[in-house]
Length: 86
Image (cartoon, rainbow, N blue to C red; front, top):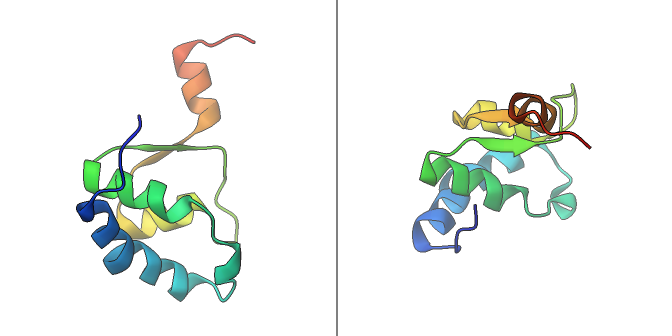
């Protein structure tokens, strides 16, 4: 899905997602589009599909989703569930 960055998503990024990043890492210069995706899923009640896996010591989408109550699923699960063949 494609969503515009509306006021509600921006507020979720500022109030919820970025504080979670700041609490989890000191490497804020390495953050890319992840906050937008997480905030959009949080606001829209969507599940985030990611190829990242939770890893100890790394700030990854799954860890932040878990901490914010955002549902997520690994990309491989979607591929298998949908029966995609490559």
